[in-house]
Length: 103
Length: 307
Image 1 (cartoon, helix red, strand yellow):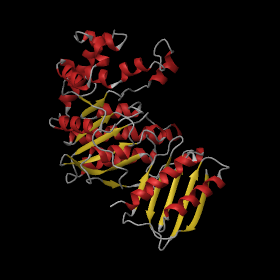
Image 2 (cartoon, rainbow over the protein chains, first blue to last red; image 1 turned 30 degrees about the vertical axis):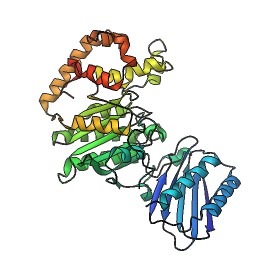
Image 3 (cartoon, one colour; image 1 turned 120 degrees about the vertical axis):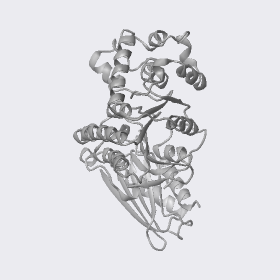
Image 4 (cartoon, one colour; image 1 turned 90 degrees about the vertical axis):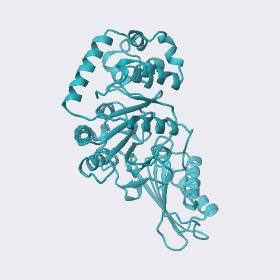
């Protein structure tokens, strides 16, 4: 199991009051994303557990692009990966941040 | 922690366990116990270099079904086939034991089964969990708790999940749902393809599937494959839940003995349906839910309080 983690400073805190959300399922080609509003300020942490090795740069690029576009400041994002493609990862991150912004 | 809410007409078969829980229960009523942010995960899967899930593929909690307080457990059939492992099994077991021991908790337990059985990577813990769960369900039923199995997911209810379903007070199943002990591929591997061809989906569904289970009395209600369908069917079986005592067990033994005598010589589902007195058994496969329900309600063997 490969563990990756990334830290970013987003432009701002993600709006919304929801303190946690989960989306997706650990299955072949899928992943689960757990989002928790537990970090002060505009910092953002992403921790990934994936059974596949050799995709560090892809993960880094997908997370950096997500942070740039959605500014998920204040979130700790934890991922259990089942071998998802980058587009699926991006989709789940978008769905997760939408859930955190709801209400 | 709600997933994107999946309500009403949306399908049960393709839904995730979280979508089923939020789609089945009254909006906003669900409270999860030991949720994913507590990260109570399998301690075994990492030894096999397999990814784990934050909730180990089981969601437990309480909520309301049409205003009725319920406890609920849902297996995620897409994660490791919804299997019983050390953590996932203990979560369901703890829920049923809590209902058994605490009268101030809801005395209705809904088990949304979607499982191939015991998780092979943690088989000893999984087998123990199933055995303890069956014992706990029997004890809970004896204490007056209604334990209802809802079966309609991709993994069906096989192995320990099939045993669990059969231990419940009532079973609700959809056409896509399947209940069995040995799954089709297990039978084929052990007995040969002539005995049971697991690739023949029509054969598998006509034998293990919801229609046959309902018609031969292996399930008590037939649900449309939707959130609404399962809510309506669950509500209907909750109106009259049989108690469990020695008499019930004896009645169940007699029922199963009679069923074996009546249907034991049949070599497929259609011949069982013919033996049960269904006039046009070939038509059952294309029958919609309403007609199937009406047909099943008219068959003596399909309606009983043994279980």
